[in-house]
Each structure stands twice: as structure tokens, then as C-alpha cells.
Image 1: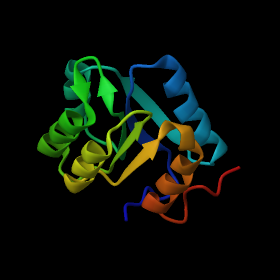
Image 2: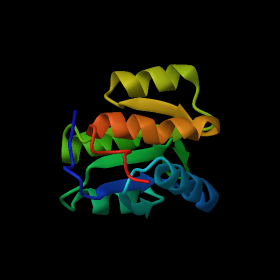
Image 3: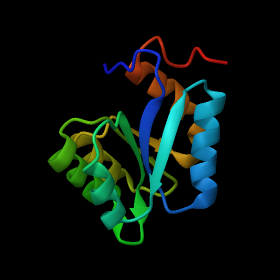
Image 4: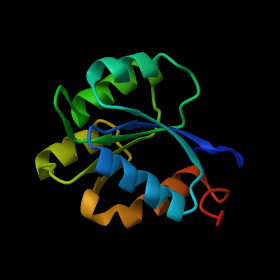
Length: 133
């Protein structure tokens, strides 16, 4: 389990939908997860941001125009080792969800169940998370 010791989570959000990005942020805020979110929406932007240090977590949509969660996870593993990675998708086939988990994604969450996101992130980063109201 990772820990951020009471500081704001540095979250890299890989998402091409403005509405979905806002919903993810809203659910984290309502769940008491303090996060500084940087959003990217394509392969090139993800690669550039992964060169920066200090990320705590990646949350990634499954399908973007030039990238899917499997390729994004490969990029993360190549550059950032075991950085926690969560897939949030409304349309990931079960076989691909199984594959992305096998490759190291911590969780695959359906976008219709975003209320589960903050509790999962809180558990990932320990008891200091999720207790902020």
C-alpha cells in the first residue's frame, strides 16, 4: 500500500471526455480524496507527463482516440514501474479488463459505479486518505 502522508495526491488522469473528467474529480472530492489532477487525452501527452517525477496514481479511461488502457499501462510500466494504475471505463470488454488487471492495473471500475473510486483510492493510500470532509 502506498502512502502520501496527508499531502495532496498527484493524479495523472488519462481521459478525453470533459464530462467524465469532471465526474471523476467530483467523486474524488466528494469522497474526501485530496488530489491535484493533471489531465492528458492522448499518447504523446501521456508520454511527456510520465517524464515528470512525483506522480502518485494514474486513472485511465479504457478507450481514447489514439490510446487504450492496455497501451497506457505499458507506457506507465516502462517509465514509472509500479505506479498505481486504475482503469475507469464505461465500455471495456471483460477479456480486456482481465488482461489489464493481469498486467498490473490495481482496479477496473465501471463509469456507472464511480462512487467506488474514492474508497478504492483511499484504501490504496491508507488511513490518511478519505477522512477529509
